Amino acid sequence: MAVEVKICGITDEDAMDAAIEAEADYVGLVFYPPSPRAVTPERAAELVEFTPGEITKVGLFVDPDDALLERVLTQVRLDLLQLHGSETPERIEAIRLEYGLPVMKVVPVAIASDLAAAEPFLAVADRLLFDAKPPKGATLPGGNAVSFDWTILKGRSWGLPWMLAGGLTPANVAEAVRISGAGAVDVSSGVERSPGVKDPDLIRAFISAARGA
Ligand SMILES: O=C(O)c1ccccc1N[C@@H]1O[C@H](COP(=O)(O)O)[C@@H](O)[C@H]1O
Image (tube, rainbow, N blue to C red; front, side, top):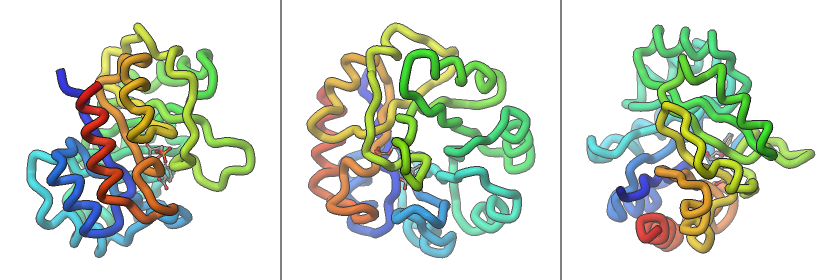
Protein backbone atom coordinates (compact mmCIF):
# COMPACT_ATOMS: atom_id res chain seq x y z
CA MET A 1 0.00 0.00 0.00
CA ALA A 2 1.18 3.53 -0.79
CA VAL A 3 2.77 5.40 2.04
CA GLU A 4 0.60 8.27 3.29
CA VAL A 5 2.18 11.71 3.47
CA LYS A 6 1.53 14.68 5.72
CA ILE A 7 2.99 18.08 4.88
CA CYS A 8 3.02 20.10 8.10
CA GLY A 9 3.44 23.78 8.88
CA ILE A 10 1.85 25.20 5.76
CA THR A 11 1.66 28.99 5.88
CA ASP A 12 1.00 30.06 2.30
CA GLU A 13 -1.04 29.22 -0.78
CA ASP A 14 1.95 28.14 -2.90
CA ALA A 15 2.81 25.41 -0.42
CA MET A 16 -0.83 24.38 -0.04
CA ASP A 17 -1.24 24.18 -3.82
CA ALA A 18 1.93 22.08 -4.17
CA ALA A 19 0.72 19.69 -1.47
CA ILE A 20 -2.71 19.39 -3.10
CA GLU A 21 -1.34 18.90 -6.61
CA ALA A 22 1.16 16.29 -5.44
CA GLU A 23 -1.71 14.55 -3.64
CA ALA A 24 -0.62 14.82 -0.04
CA ASP A 25 -2.91 12.82 2.23
CA TYR A 26 -2.71 15.28 5.14
CA VAL A 27 -1.86 18.96 5.46
CA GLY A 28 -0.90 20.42 8.81
CA LEU A 29 -1.47 23.88 10.27
CA VAL A 30 0.42 24.94 13.37
CA PHE A 31 -1.50 26.67 16.17
CA TYR A 32 1.48 27.18 18.47
CA PRO A 33 2.54 30.83 18.49
CA PRO A 34 6.27 30.30 19.27
CA SER A 35 6.66 28.33 16.02
CA PRO A 36 7.89 30.09 12.88
CA ARG A 37 5.14 28.09 11.15
CA ALA A 38 2.30 29.33 13.35
CA VAL A 39 -0.82 30.64 11.66
CA THR A 40 -3.78 32.51 13.10
CA PRO A 41 -7.19 30.81 12.90
CA GLU A 42 -8.23 33.44 10.34
CA ARG A 43 -5.24 32.63 8.08
CA ALA A 44 -5.73 28.90 8.53
CA ALA A 45 -9.39 29.22 7.49
CA GLU A 46 -8.28 30.93 4.27
CA LEU A 47 -5.68 28.26 3.58
CA VAL A 48 -8.07 25.31 3.98
CA GLU A 49 -11.03 26.93 2.27
CA PHE A 50 -10.38 25.32 -1.12
CA THR A 51 -8.54 22.22 0.09
CA PRO A 52 -10.19 19.09 -1.32
CA GLY A 53 -12.29 17.11 1.12
CA GLU A 54 -10.21 13.97 0.67
CA ILE A 55 -7.14 15.67 2.17
CA THR A 56 -7.15 15.43 5.95
CA LYS A 57 -6.69 18.87 7.53
CA VAL A 58 -4.64 18.53 10.71
CA GLY A 59 -4.37 21.15 13.45
CA LEU A 60 -1.14 20.97 15.44
CA PHE A 61 -1.41 22.09 19.06
CA VAL A 62 0.94 22.00 22.04
CA ASP A 63 -0.88 21.63 25.38
CA PRO A 64 -3.82 23.70 24.13
CA ASP A 65 -6.36 25.09 26.56
CA ASP A 66 -10.07 25.03 25.75
CA ALA A 67 -10.09 28.70 24.78
CA LEU A 68 -7.56 28.12 22.00
CA LEU A 69 -9.28 24.95 20.77
CA GLU A 70 -12.62 26.75 20.68
CA ARG A 71 -11.20 29.79 18.90
CA VAL A 72 -9.59 27.61 16.24
CA LEU A 73 -12.33 25.04 15.80
CA THR A 74 -15.09 27.58 15.42
CA GLN A 75 -13.19 29.15 12.53
CA VAL A 76 -11.22 26.39 10.84
CA ARG A 77 -12.56 23.22 9.27
CA LEU A 78 -10.17 20.62 10.75
CA ASP A 79 -10.40 16.82 10.54
CA LEU A 80 -7.71 15.70 12.99
CA LEU A 81 -5.99 17.21 16.04
CA GLN A 82 -2.26 16.60 16.46
CA LEU A 83 -1.30 17.02 20.10
CA HIS A 84 2.43 17.65 20.34
CA GLY A 85 2.84 18.56 24.00
CA SER A 86 2.60 16.85 27.38
CA GLU A 87 -1.12 16.12 27.13
CA THR A 88 -2.23 13.33 29.47
CA PRO A 89 -4.49 10.44 28.41
CA GLU A 90 -7.27 12.11 30.47
CA ARG A 91 -6.86 15.39 28.61
CA ILE A 92 -6.98 13.57 25.28
CA GLU A 93 -10.19 11.83 26.26
CA ALA A 94 -11.69 15.16 27.30
CA ILE A 95 -10.66 16.88 24.05
CA ARG A 96 -12.07 14.08 21.91
CA LEU A 97 -15.33 14.17 23.82
CA GLU A 98 -15.68 17.96 23.82
CA TYR A 99 -14.71 18.65 20.20
CA GLY A 100 -15.73 15.41 18.47
CA LEU A 101 -12.54 15.15 16.44
CA PRO A 102 -9.99 12.34 16.28
CA VAL A 103 -6.65 12.88 18.01
CA MET A 104 -3.14 11.97 16.92
CA LYS A 105 -0.90 11.91 19.99
CA VAL A 106 2.78 12.58 19.53
CA VAL A 107 5.29 10.36 21.30
CA PRO A 108 8.79 11.88 21.48
CA VAL A 109 11.50 9.28 20.89
CA ALA A 110 15.27 9.16 21.23
CA ILE A 111 15.91 5.54 22.27
CA ALA A 112 13.93 2.29 22.20
CA SER A 113 12.71 2.56 25.81
CA ASP A 114 10.97 5.85 24.94
CA LEU A 115 8.43 3.86 22.92
CA ALA A 116 6.83 2.65 26.16
CA ALA A 117 5.42 6.18 26.53
CA ALA A 118 2.96 5.29 23.75
CA GLU A 119 1.17 2.67 25.87
CA PRO A 120 -1.06 4.93 28.00
CA PHE A 121 -2.40 6.52 24.82
CA LEU A 122 -3.38 3.34 22.99
CA ALA A 123 -6.85 3.30 24.55
CA VAL A 124 -7.61 7.00 24.09
CA ALA A 125 -5.91 8.26 20.90
CA ASP A 126 -6.95 7.55 17.32
CA ARG A 127 -3.42 7.63 15.95
CA LEU A 128 0.16 7.92 17.15
CA LEU A 129 2.98 9.98 15.73
CA PHE A 130 6.55 9.10 16.63
CA ASP A 131 8.75 12.19 16.46
CA ALA A 132 12.33 12.78 17.55
CA LYS A 133 12.79 14.17 21.05
CA PRO A 134 13.83 17.82 20.79
CA PRO A 135 17.58 18.36 21.15
CA LYS A 136 18.94 20.06 24.30
CA GLY A 137 18.28 23.77 24.19
CA ALA A 138 15.58 23.53 21.50
CA THR A 139 12.76 25.98 21.97
CA LEU A 140 10.14 23.93 20.10
CA PRO A 141 8.87 20.43 20.99
CA GLY A 142 8.96 19.51 17.29
CA GLY A 143 9.87 20.85 13.90
CA ASN A 144 13.56 20.65 14.78
CA ALA A 145 14.80 18.71 11.73
CA VAL A 146 16.15 15.99 14.02
CA SER A 147 15.69 12.29 13.37
CA PHE A 148 16.03 9.21 15.57
CA ASP A 149 17.07 5.60 15.07
CA TRP A 150 14.29 4.27 12.83
CA THR A 151 15.25 0.63 13.50
CA ILE A 152 13.59 0.77 16.93
CA LEU A 153 10.17 0.91 15.23
CA LYS A 154 10.79 -2.00 12.90
CA GLY A 155 8.34 -4.85 13.39
CA ARG A 156 6.40 -3.01 16.12
CA SER A 157 2.63 -2.84 15.90
CA TRP A 158 0.50 -0.63 18.06
CA GLY A 159 -3.09 -1.50 17.26
CA LEU A 160 -3.45 2.08 16.02
CA PRO A 161 -2.36 3.73 12.79
CA TRP A 162 0.92 5.60 13.26
CA MET A 163 3.14 8.11 11.50
CA LEU A 164 6.86 8.69 11.49
CA ALA A 165 8.28 12.22 11.81
CA GLY A 166 11.52 13.95 12.66
CA GLY A 167 14.20 15.12 10.27
CA LEU A 168 12.64 13.53 7.21
CA THR A 169 13.69 14.91 3.82
CA PRO A 170 13.22 13.97 0.16
CA ALA A 171 16.64 12.30 0.38
CA ASN A 172 16.02 10.08 3.42
CA VAL A 173 12.27 9.40 3.48
CA ALA A 174 12.39 6.22 1.38
CA GLU A 175 15.04 4.73 3.64
CA ALA A 176 13.13 5.83 6.74
CA VAL A 177 10.04 4.01 5.50
CA ARG A 178 12.00 0.91 4.54
CA ILE A 179 13.74 0.68 7.91
CA SER A 180 10.87 1.69 10.23
CA GLY A 181 7.99 0.06 8.35
CA ALA A 182 5.99 3.29 8.64
CA GLY A 183 2.78 3.45 6.64
CA ALA A 184 2.63 7.24 6.96
CA VAL A 185 5.22 10.01 7.19
CA ASP A 186 5.13 13.63 8.34
CA VAL A 187 7.52 16.42 7.35
CA SER A 188 7.99 20.08 8.08
CA SER A 189 11.60 21.39 8.07
CA GLY A 190 12.71 18.99 5.35
CA VAL A 191 10.55 20.73 2.75
CA GLU A 192 11.52 24.29 3.69
CA ARG A 193 13.86 26.96 2.31
CA SER A 194 14.13 28.48 5.77
CA PRO A 195 12.15 27.97 9.00
CA GLY A 196 8.51 28.64 8.17
CA VAL A 197 9.02 29.04 4.41
CA LYS A 198 7.99 25.95 2.48
CA ASP A 199 9.54 25.12 -0.90
CA PRO A 200 6.98 23.76 -3.42
CA ASP A 201 9.72 21.82 -5.28
CA LEU A 202 10.80 20.10 -2.07
CA ILE A 203 7.16 19.28 -1.24
CA ARG A 204 6.76 17.59 -4.63
CA ALA A 205 10.10 15.79 -4.27
CA PHE A 206 9.22 14.56 -0.78
CA ILE A 207 5.83 13.17 -1.79
CA SER A 208 7.29 11.50 -4.83
CA ALA A 209 10.15 9.94 -2.82
CA ALA A 210 7.78 8.72 -0.09
CA ARG A 211 5.40 7.19 -2.62
CA GLY A 212 8.27 5.46 -4.41
CA ALA A 213 9.33 3.84 -1.14
O1 LIG B 1 6.77 22.55 13.00
C1 LIG B 1 6.75 23.16 14.07
O2 LIG B 1 7.06 24.36 14.15
C2 LIG B 1 6.32 22.45 15.31
C3 LIG B 1 6.15 23.18 16.46
C4 LIG B 1 5.76 22.56 17.63
C5 LIG B 1 5.56 21.19 17.65
C6 LIG B 1 5.74 20.43 16.51
C7 LIG B 1 6.13 21.03 15.32
N1 LIG B 1 6.32 20.31 14.14
C8 LIG B 1 6.18 18.90 14.02
O3 LIG B 1 7.39 18.27 14.37
C9 LIG B 1 7.55 17.06 13.62
C10 LIG B 1 8.91 16.99 12.98
O4 LIG B 1 9.18 18.09 12.20
P1 LIG B 1 10.47 18.17 11.22
O5 LIG B 1 10.06 17.53 9.93
O6 LIG B 1 11.60 17.50 11.90
O7 LIG B 1 10.68 19.63 11.06
C11 LIG B 1 6.40 17.03 12.65
O8 LIG B 1 5.39 16.21 13.19
C12 LIG B 1 5.90 18.43 12.60
O9 LIG B 1 4.52 18.40 12.38
